Figure 1 (cartoon, each protein chain N blue to C red):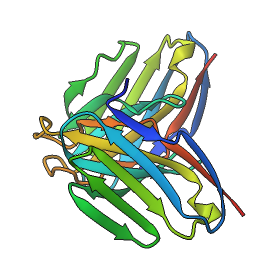
Figure 2 (figure 1 turned 120 degrees about the horizontal axis):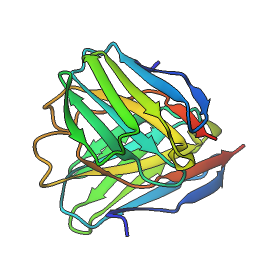
Figure 3 (figure 1 turned 135 degrees about the horizontal axis):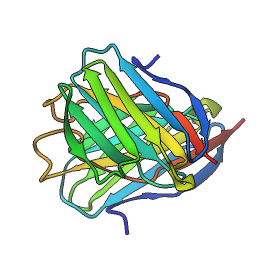
Figure 4 (figure 1 turned 45 degrees about the vertical axis):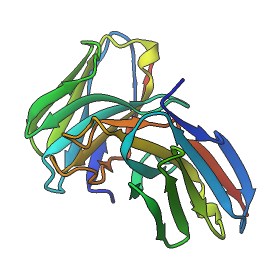
Length: 114
Length: 113
């Protein structure tokens, strides 16, 4: 149990579908992150939220739309995705402003776009 | 070329062997992290280093700032150590937050019984 829960664990969707990924943390952290992990590539930071405010958008296509209603919940809304978007999407959290505090990751959502 | 390079990309060894995974980086750093990713996907932080050496159980991490190189060692390896080991660095300019990490691509380790 990592303290960060992601649902669903697996998702298969067509290019015209709309779906959402959910992340929830009960660690009292105030920063949450979305990462994309493609096979044999380094993690790519997508979005950062600090106290519910988005502080980083790493040039992510608009077909990915994040939402952070409170410090404990983070969503990633998906629409009109492409097959190259198939990857493992990881959510993480940490305390904000404490340098090098460990990131706490969820187990990820394995997304397949057909 | 990625700013953080790990070697080897894949490593298969027998149970009990001494394991070394390497991480080289090309930028000035303030800190280096080692993380472990289990086959299920979850990532766990193992170490954060800014100098010297750290040990936790059978895991040892070392860093040489002058040579821009870090190693992760596993003594008396066991099949449960099978995972992807990831190196990440925080550059000296990334002083305002801990999310500005530069990530390596990972080393996939398989320990056979």
